[in-house]
Length: 280
Ligand code: 13P
Image (cartoon, rainbow, N blue to C red):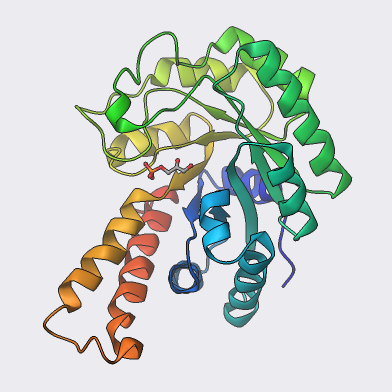
């Protein structure tokens, strides 16, 4: 099955009161685990990678080949997305490799520069009939602290103007989540999310899904989040399974050694897909 535009899958998910999981890919083992989970759940899924991750696999073209292989093998509906591209070169190489969505993350810049760069990325994506995500406000790392400070949260009044100017197809918002582990108790600004959702007509994205309480994620989905990014939780599952295999399985037989890691990614991904469909 050919890959879908990411925004089309997100719009479909919202019609069913759900969000799609967007799972980080770093090798063929974890891509396979994600695909297995999507098949088990009969669900669409988003595969995504940062330049660091797809370069680990040999390049954007290598990831695209791996993802297309498993999408066809398991016969699943999927999109392939560039996560946190930092240059237009990243956007270009991913579009040329067949990604169906890209993100140029210019959220560290001021509104004007973010809008200018995001508009360029959106125009490039449109040329390939791919979708484009941008981030307004800034979702940092858990260690940074201050996920709820005014300086990083998305300003609802700016969101509509940003989408109109850039023509992006979906918008990532900063409402209190963090990438990686939270330093303290996670608190989401759902009031802000509600205002943003009321002011824009594109689907919304939540970065930093790992470690966020389930009830908060499901409330965010009800208020308009259509895609939730997950990296840390599946990476932890993958690494814990390998750790657990030590002493139990022989290092000299990698074929068996990594099977628990693939299964662990599949199990964690399945849990998330069901959570985002509001089934648990
Ligand atoms: P987590 O590692 O917190 O799941 O965040 C992933 C993410 O947002 C990738 O863009």
